[in-house]
Image 1: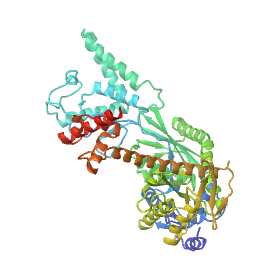
Image 2: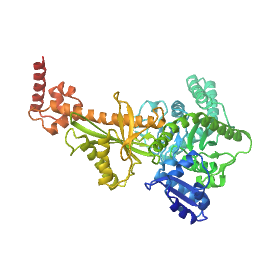
Image 3: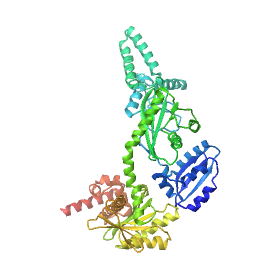
Image 4: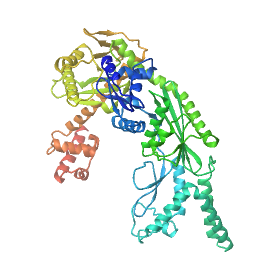
Length: 597
């Protein structure tokens, strides 16, 4: 942390609302927050004692910037925009990875009813969420029986069975007036918002009339529809005596973590809940309002008619943010549901703590141990390299990245060595490290806090030549050596290089093992892929008319040597070979089979 710079900037902070952006030594934005008074909020991070998570954040901050706004609401809206834009690592939200099914009336000329888990900002009408796909499909099946919207995805050229059953208006052969569709959509909307009770009454009347007229088949159809409504729409216990759609929120905070539970109430029933867990770095009430903004910014979360929140919430601020009325219930069923959501949040957070603490111990705790052992700052970003080849052939290198103690697979990279001579491991390491960090500097990508080389002193010195002497970078470089059983045995670091003692049962040592195993696995996998390609390609060498381009064509089409060897003339022609060339291929492999026998 650059104390002088931060102290100077803190001294001139304004007494106004706004947003602040915390940066690490790379200039990367690692946290975004909003404040009613910027001076008080930003200064609070650098004064007094903090819990572990906030302390960790503060230790990474070397600079910050801020944006003044005209109101707290404007600051809140800007905060949500900045979080979405920069995706700071300390604004992470841990959620159940769950999507919910919705029923949608499409906005096509001849609309359909469909089930979807993607809520888009289109002109379609969405209903839900439903607790599971079975409930959504059962409800759609019922609506399909009652309302004659088209069922086919692609319009046929003649009427189908649904038309004859009275479940489709047959837009494939008839022009349907817009007002006919509007009437059906209105009825479906009314039905799903509690109007099914009225539909049921009307069906009972029709059933009785049909029975009196001795139309027993028709009466039976009405009875089946009534039964289906009861099964689908009324089988759950009612939680409300009206049919207003509501989302009920409750949250609980402990040890710097927040858990938010949301109950979805639709058609008078509690149908599903949503759980979110995340670390917080400021007042829980402020974090909760930011959470509300992020929650409804997601397309799959449709705002209901009403939102109920705990008593501690600033409902004026939340209402302005979401542009709708938000309620704090004072008594009765709604208050009980908010308290139930809070109780569930507390239980969920308690249950997760053991797992969270263990995970933090294995990741952030391991990084801190590693930094202490090496006498460097905790290496939040670690990049590790390994070479792989057999007797100098198919030489490749691989790099894996661990951020905050976790593998970041999207940042992994593979390298085919181009300039290094065969058997020259040191030359290969120089080449790959040069290529990697020349690109990092050129594209202004984040630099690592620690580079790990899977190898001994010679490999480390080769990497150091490039990093320090050629590129002028100041990045710690360490090596990992294995024992006779190919197990991680020691960490090498320093100038001069020396062994860094670490307890084999420590989380820091386990982290090194995970990094070494992962970079070795990644390098070996890449090497096998290259070797496999060359093995297949070499089997095609010497065949008349098969050059590099046709080798690629055959490999892409068949996928393996075994399939190429077993292919018929027709199959080779399907792969793009001329008839004569296809015959040459078949004869070549048949001759090889006979000679091997």
